[in-house]
Length: 253
Image (cartoon, rainbow, N blue to C red; front, top):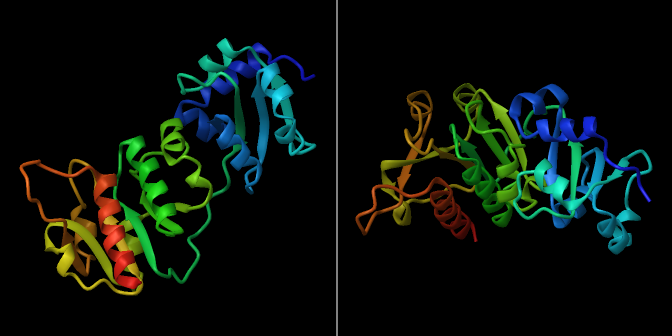
């Protein structure tokens, strides 16, 4: 039905697992049937889809939505599992274009997340999913934050990266120029249950190891903390984000 994936194309796809190649080619790989379905319904430009012959045969409803300008290739499941990062991806993957960066849409309304150097791909993907769950549409990221199109970020986001706008900015300078409350998650902050959350504002989540950098602490207008009742040294960044988002959103209801 479709031509067989060539060795050169397979090498190209495999290289997109590395950030420098993603940046050079302005492309990324998304794996799995559900992700591909969501991608096809999004504004992303899909360069090609690679699937097993059985995938194309058994999913004619998905195939019917393929753009006419998009390439499609067949590959055996053994090759598909080597091209991507998912251990059990035996069906399909897509290569899509990375959109050109855009400026955040102003004014920022409601809750906006700001991530100061989140390094773990699983954390970033989960935070994106949390933002989607709580209806948060904008995430500002320091340049030191892990790449959005890292395969593990995309996997952890469970498709929510398609619904949340994420922007990499000079975070200290950007926040300084906003006329909004900037709420920082900090150990010496006010207990989250006692804090009066504003209608609109920025929630800053710091790096997993070092917290919020001094340059951003300088522009934080309010510091909040999640009280500890046990003996753990810290909370996972994504878990802390979920707790704080829940309190903030509940305060607005």
